[in-house]
Image 1 (cartoon, rainbow over the protein chains, first blue to last red):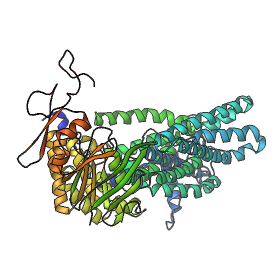
Image 2: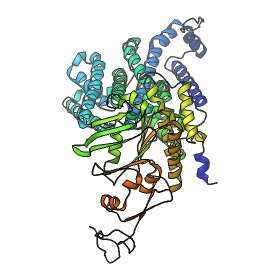
Image 3: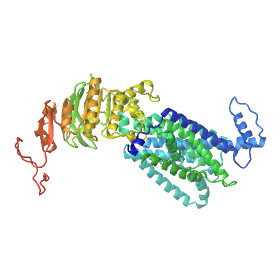
Image 4: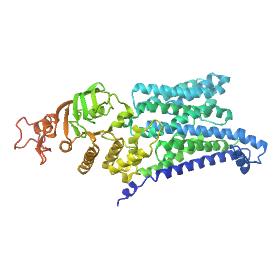
Length: 352
Length: 282
C-alpha cells in the first residue's frame, strides 16, 4: 500500500461530532478568556469572589459575593465593559474576515479589505487633524463613515470593471491605496497630530465604557445576523459563480448582501477600537482547522473564537507593560503571526 | 414531456458571434451529442441552453420556455456540469453532493431529511457514497466526475447538460461514466445533452448528433449521417478513416501522414510532406 493511499482515505471525521466538539471548545475558550481577563490587572481581585460576583449578574442567579464595593466598581465599570467591547470587536472582525473569505473564495482576505481600513484611517485622521477639540468624540463616527464609504467606492469601482471577484478585489486594493495616500498627505501637513493618529491607527480599547457597548450593539446585531444567515449560500458560492448560478443562486446579490454586512461589521469594530489587523485572517483559519470549511460552521465559530482571542489579546495589551499599555494591534500581530505560521505548518502537512 | 427544442439560438461573447442560428433538439429520454472542432461553439451552446449565457432564440423543454423560468425554478428542471467543475478542496463529498438541493431550499432554510435522502441516493447511484466523508481534493479524475454527476442528479432535473464529461478520463473511466449516464437516462427518463470530443464515443452513446462548425450546424441526425469521412475531413481538417462496427455505428480511425493507398475517397491530399514525412502546414 503506498503511503499516500492511507492519507487519502482519511475521513474528515464524523461531521456532527466534530462540529459539536468545536462549539464546546469555542465556548470554553471564551469563558476562560473572559474570566482570565476579569481577574488580571492593576487591582488584585479575589478570584472566587469575582467569579461569584459575575455569576450573580446572570439573570435568575442569586449569589452573594464577598467583593468589596471598590472592587465591584473596578469589575463592573472598568474591566467588564472593556472585556465585552473587546469580545464584540473581536467577534465582528473575525466574522467579517470569514464572510469576506467566503465571498471572495480566498482565505487570505482580511476584514480591512475593500478600502474599509483605509477609509476608516482617513476618516479618523481627518477628524483628528481638522476637528481639533471636537476630534476625539468625532473620531468613531468619522472612522465608521470612512470605512463604509471606502467599501462603497471600492464596490462601485469593481462593478464598473465587470462581474467577478477578482476585479472587486483589485478595485478594493486600488481604492485602499488611494485613500491611504490622501491620509498620508493630510497627516504629513500636520505633523503635531502624528502621535494621536498613530495611537488610534494601532488600535486600543483603553477608553472602553458601557456607553460604547450600547452604541455599537444595534450595528453588531444587524451585521452579525445577516452574515450568519448566509453560511449556506457561501458554501454554494464556493463552487464558482457559474455553477452557483446553475444551482439557482444569484451570486451577485449574495455578494452584495454579505459584503455590505461584513463592511458594517468591520466599520463598527473599527469605530470603537481603531485598526486591529490580522484577527480576521487567523481566527477563521484556526476555525477551519478545527471544524472544517463549511461556512455554516465557520461563521458562528469565528464569532466566538474571535471574541475570546481579542479579549486575551487586550488582556496582554494592558498588563504586559503595566501601568503603560501596548497598542492592541501590536499584540494581535505579535501573538498572531507565530500562531498563524504554526497553523500553516499543520495545514501543509495535511495537504502535501 | 422533457423534449428539448432549440430554435434559432444565437450567442455573442464579447461582441463576437459564437453560436449563430443553431436549431437542434432531442426527444424525451434521448441523448444528443454536440460535436465539432475546438472553438466551434459547443460549450457556448450548452451553457446558453443551461440559461447561463444571454442569448437570442428559443429554448423549450417540454412546454416550458426556459427563458421564462429563472433561478431556482430553472435549476429544478435542468442540471449543468461544466467541463472542469470547481470542486472545493476541503469540502466533503457528501456536502458537495448535497449542494444539488440548493434549488429546492428557501432562502433561509437548510437541507432537511428528504434532501439528504435524495443526495444519498444519487451518491449511491454513482458509487461515491463509499467515500462520502472524504475531502474532494483526494478524489481521482473519475471519482471527481462521478461526484459532479451525483450533485447534478441531486437536482432531480429532467434535462442533464454535460460539457465534455469524459475529457480528463482514461478510456475505462470514460466508458464507466458514459455507461452510468446511459443507465440514468434509461432508469429516470432523463434527457441528456453532452458535448463530446471523441467522435467514435459520441456515435456509440448518442441517439442523435449535431455537428457544429464556426457556430453553425453543419450536419445533424443519427451518427451514420453525421460522422462521415467527408464531413470529418472538411470540418476538422483531419485525416481519418470511418468504418462501421457490427452495430452499424461509425468508428473513426485517425491516420498518420499522407493518405495511404486503399479505398479512400479521391480528392486533394491535405498538406505536403516535409523531410520528416509529416504533413506541413496547409
